[in-house]
Amino acid sequence: MQPIYNCHRGFVIDPSQLQKDTFDIETFFMPLYIPVTDIVRGIGWTVGGSSASWTKESVSDIVFLLKRDALPLFTKAVSDEDLLDITLEKVSFNSLHKLQSQLALAVRLRNMQLFDKIYSEIKEKLYVDHYDWHRDILQRIEFIKENLLHYDLLMKYFDKCREENIQVLGIKDFVN
Image (cartoon, rainbow, N blue to C red; front, side):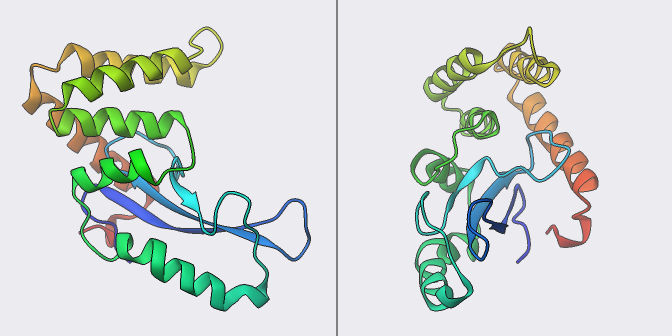
């Protein structure tokens, strides 16, 4: 499964920390135009719901749910509009990465009402006095806000982030 142009996506199987022979399966969408240093699973959901755990005997149920809930989203090209819908409707994780993705999508789609809403949500969640990476996020969103009238500049910024992420993540051979 190749990443679509602006978004890496996939499945992650996580061994349960609580029960020996069980695991969780998470889907993720990772917009490539948000700076990262590793794969981030801020946009996605747990297959079967947040309390679902699976065993190797659950394969037929897992296959059914993946075919029904995930593969339709993974096998087609996902536009910015589709990705925004996914982040607003299907997401079970509530992270700063998800909010930054929504902020970038709002800019890319020129939805300033959504931008203002997400910008405020991010600022409420940041602890810039305690975490360097929160200061980095604040600098990024402030840069974006200051340049809202310069759409072409922001698109170049997002493209630069995409190219850097492709290098950092080592996915150059898998990106179309």
